[in-house]
Amino acid sequence: MKSLNLLFIGVAMVCHHGFCQQPLLSMEMVDSFITKTMSDWHTMGIAVGIIKKDSVLLVKGYGYRDFAGKLPVTGQTIFPIASCSKTFTSALLGIAANEKKIQLDKPVNHYFPKFQLYTEKLTQQATIEDLLSHRTGLAGHDWAWTFNTNFPEDVYLKRIKYLEPFAALGTKFQYSNFMYFALSALSAKLYSKSWSDIVKEKFFETMEMNNSYGSFTSLKKKENIALSYQYKDSFQLKKSNQMDDLMGAASINSTASDLIHWLQMWINGGTYKNKQILTPQFVKKAISSQIVVYHGLSNQFPDEHFMNMGLSWFLSSYRGHYKANHTGNIDGFSSSITFFPYDSLGIVVLTNQNNSPLINLVPVFIADLFFNLPIRDKNSIMLSNQNKDSGKPMVATIINIDTITKKPAFALSMYTGHFQNPGYGLIKIENYKKALLLTYYDLKLVLLPKGGNSFSSHYFEEGEIETDGVGDVVFNLDKTGIHSFHIPFEPAVKNIVFRRQ
Image (cartoon, rainbow, N blue to C red; front, side, top):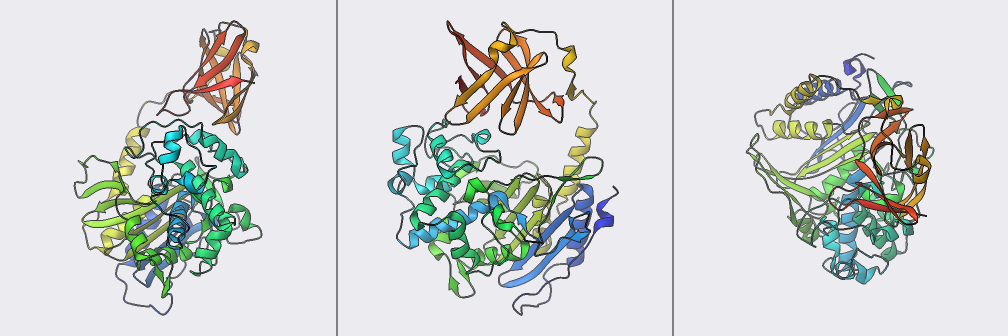
């Protein structure tokens, strides 16, 4: 399929609520940049929204939400917003605090006894603010949640107790989907409703977010929904797996038009159309630094200072302008929501592409235009880095299992069976030709013998064994035989041990 220059489809600029003013930036330059970067990065579709205070400057779609049907992206096209959902969870706890249901500086366990961390001391000390700002010291443990399992709430709650921390409480930042899942479950307990129903009542209905939904399953029979695409020599439709079971960590689906309302509320100190959604005090706290994310200085861009964490918002200084933002990525979709509190500027970017660079490139380009700064061509820098990588000598990425000569200490059948870890769940290991096949939900790894009881792991997709994997799997034995194995699922802590069932 040829360049996405052939795919450009624009939906006219929208002026909401009578705020049609002289544009504060060149929409022609915005259009040109977006269409170029879509082509450069092989992006099927994107929706962009820009707001200044209460004036909507742009809500526009580019490319396709459904290429086969030639259906364009519009400002009302529904996308999963993935981790941008966390800003809703944070706001919901802010409302609960204002309603005297909780105190943000009190331990989560005080209100929600089911919430248990790795040690009793940590359980009794970790506050709601600690969870909101990712400073509990818990490692990410992403493999323990990353599959579309649609577990009931209690499954994840029980797992949290067995997930090892890597740092002391309050000392280091570590992004954690599990902690925002736990906050969602806390919210549901506080209001005796599902998390999805609470965000609908507190935010979607009160802020005219009429095409926003708290779960993927809520989208049944909706029409203007983006499909996901990946590019490998041509565009290919990709099956997407949504994570409804993570609730407030990643499950919201919304539109550029609706999310403009969301940013408008934050820009206006918690108020949307004279309705007080959040208190000004909570808004200020949410966009105030709670812990350092990155303490280094940028050699390449010395006017882009610091990165800290507020209550769900990443905070930084972009060329002298204070910025709050969050990004999201879920299988086949990427998103970003950004606002500059002191400049009353908000930007939404939604794409149907996995790990899209555009969610970062578009907001900074718009900011450069809006602030009348020299354009910082980060797109060319990223393309140049990509081209350098592509110019490296090609190495084999697929393994031919027939060439494997090493053998393990015991017959392969000795290593097979079902193994379990209370924080991660169940793994099945079975024979596969001259090797073993490890199955963990949707993850499949071929384990190749390295000698002794050690095996290298390799992703197994569409019948091909890739050179990449998650690291070595080592089996443990005693007088009774092989009783467990350990695997580096979480690099920040010791290898995760799965015991034979």
